[in-house]
Length: 335
Image 1 (cartoon, rainbow, N blue to C red):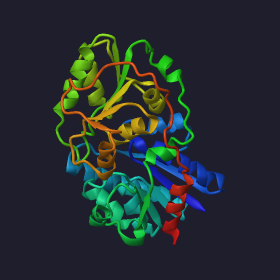
Image 2 (image 1 turned 90 degrees about the vertical axis):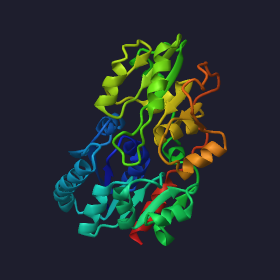
Image 3 (image 1 turned 135 degrees about the vertical axis):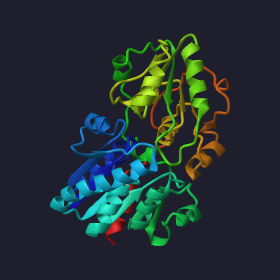
């Protein structure tokens, strides 16, 4: 069997890594393509996943997105025509959806946010199977084209699956020169280039507080170069902004607090037992609604709400799950 995986955002190498490994272990020939965006390519390199870089992100405008979609899909088509995959797997990759439709390749898409924009809805409608956590109501997925046999719902968080074999590595603390006696906070900016993003002044207020607080180090993990430059522009020694892809999961495990507008990083904190506040300003999805109701994720209303204190509990996965569940759901696309 030949299987094509497409990674278009920084979370995708992490989510797809155990699935890629399972297919490879079973003797499948695997091709991984990647879009130049944020830390996507850097994380593939960090994880040791062989890949081909094809195209880049189109920016925040709809025109830019559409142009990038057409351009990248055309370039991917040449690569995929030569590879001739039996199955295509993405995490909301619209490029993969279009190329799969043209070449009539069975495809599976993973996703854990049901209110994505029109482009991603197109990916769901084209896919043969769409895998989502069972905390997302079925009627919401039906509205975006995933219902009946097409919809595969799995228990828990997607992070529970790719962090199942995870063991935190303290090397990341030394790599970033972090003093473990200080309160360590991980900060993730809003997804400014995404269709579902809403203006989020709270993020800037959080950075202001962390930059001015004594005994605190905040590691800001930007999505774009602009976000990195704005954080550096505050000129505070409290703020550390990595200039390359890092082992963010280990950093989260050893941190005292996560404040993030990003869904994946929030849920990684939940999966690893780290206190976490969300500053997400878009429409809250079913996964986060459930985590908030259970008290495992807190909504930040004001930059002064959270405490800056050291935690004492041990880091590590709280509810590890077997990635074979995802593999089995993906293989249903071949039915």
